[in-house]
Length: 220
Ligand SMILES: C[S@@+](CC[C@H](N)C(=O)[O-])C[C@H]1O[C@@H](n2cnc3c(N)ncnc32)[C@H](O)[C@@H]1O
Image 1 (cartoon, protein in one colour):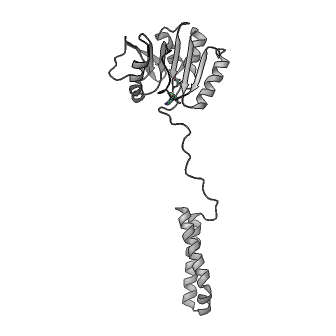
Image 2 (spheres, rainbow, N blue to C red):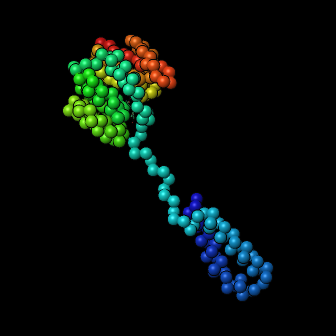
Image 3 (tube, rainbow, N blue to C red):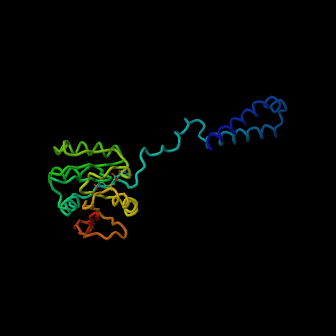
């Protein structure tokens, strides 16, 4: 739009310059008034179009990754409730689909001796998760992958942790039911699975009120 206005202004300037001799030579007062008016108009048009400034950068760049859910970390009290609610232990392999900074997987390894896999589509989150695993001394027991959770091979999991959203949970549900082994525990912070009735729920007391956690087991 701005470029078009600049082009128009430049075009009008060219016409004025081209005709200038004839106009000035005529030296009629009314013509001079018209020229001044036209020049003022062109100056205004050029300024409004920002022709003197460098071109604006192209429209905001597309985000590098398309998130199905934005990043909001689970409160640590909820992480503890999720892991203790599924009774996680050293024989477990805990998957967190959309793992953020890796806190669920890192806690499962550091506090309960489990192994874990965290998957996040955002490389920045995975970099944080890896750093957190090193800090907690569990980097040898956890793996973090930059990946779309809808393509993750979840079959090795004995526990799957989620903090996603109602709609994403519903889209994920068929994959969980078909790819997870019978008996695998699924735990979700805040969001249910539609008409897949949870085996139980707990409400974790937080400052802003209770937060629900849902538990299921893959039938088989
Ligand atoms: C609400 S956060 C939960 C973080 C972590 N699970 C927790 O409970 O602290 C959701 C995470 O899912 C990630 N995410 C969104 N869409 C995704 C996708 N299609 N595949 C993998 N990760 C995704 C986001 O980058 C974000 O880190």
